[in-house]
Image 1 (tube, one colour):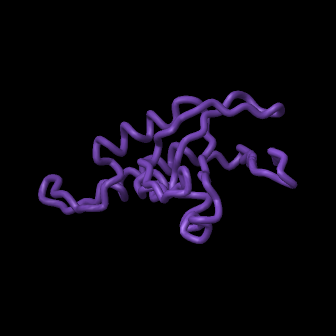
Image 2 (tube, rainbow, N blue to C red; image 1 turned 135 degrees about the horizontal axis):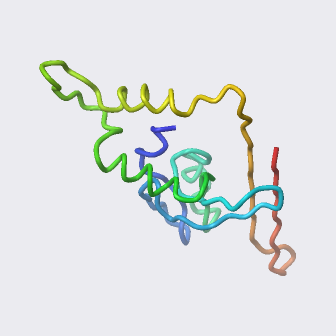
Length: 141
């Protein structure tokens, strides 16, 4: 997951390939079966697909869903260097900040009794037979 928060995000905007900073573009997302979520750009989801559809699709993006405030929290940790891959010296010992961060965070996030929820929404807008059309798909599992 941390790779998704540190890797530039590819999207299509007005037919052009654009790089977005991960953890930006935050917006509210609501699903009937869930509490309010926030959506933000990450390198997950469509990955390199914009290259395939550049010139055929005007806009394409994908956002990750998490609890409100998650993007700001993770961005602050990233900006502090906690997700860096470059080793640093700490009391004469070489440490990789990301490895320490994952070790500590993993313990805090582990909840064997908790349940994961998957929520997805796909929205396709275009023209069919000369008429503007929008089709939306939603899944909560």
